[in-house]
Length: 228
Image 1 (cartoon, rainbow, N blue to C red):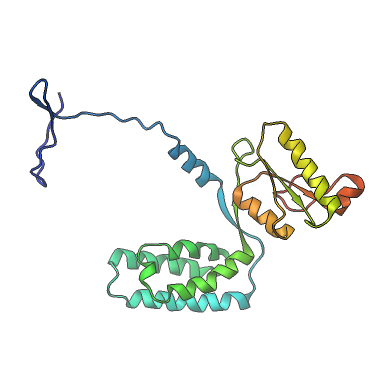
Image 2 (cartoon, rainbow, N blue to C red):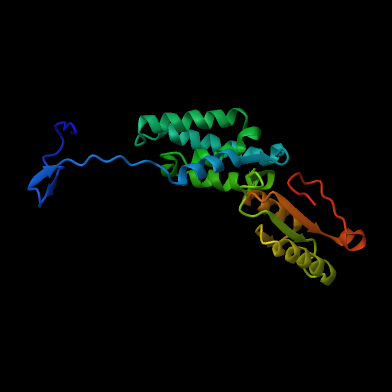
């Protein structure tokens, strides 16, 4: 039998009345967690990374540093923030300020912390941070190939060159014909942006078709996430 403890916060009965037996029953349920959501979260957390592409120059960091200083001063003066939220914002902000160039990507997390949205200068800080992060950092999902939802991306260097487009679409058809993988074709931006997009998606392999491909059937890239 289930042991019933008194509920001091409510007078509502939490029993179920069985009309057949005319008895009140206290439900006793064991719900095993066998869903995929926790597994997916673990995989995403393990694969996610924000990597610095190149160091941001001092002249780009200076406005961010000034905006961060103004943000922290505003947090310190705010009397409506709960003490825990204020202390957490100040601690994280000071940690980032101590090595701004290396920890710039952490600013997004700072601005997402409880209470940050109530600080008036937070929008100005975000406006300074986002362009620098977009230029000097990249978001990468380091999926293992067998877990990646998209296995291969085919990227033509020139979307308006008939020869390059023809070869690229032919490669996509060949890969898709196996039926064992999902392949995407993307020509919606400059090649660097296409690489960055596949990094964010977690695509393990990219095939770039360029002018050298038309000559000898091979292409190479120094990008570490691109394999041809």
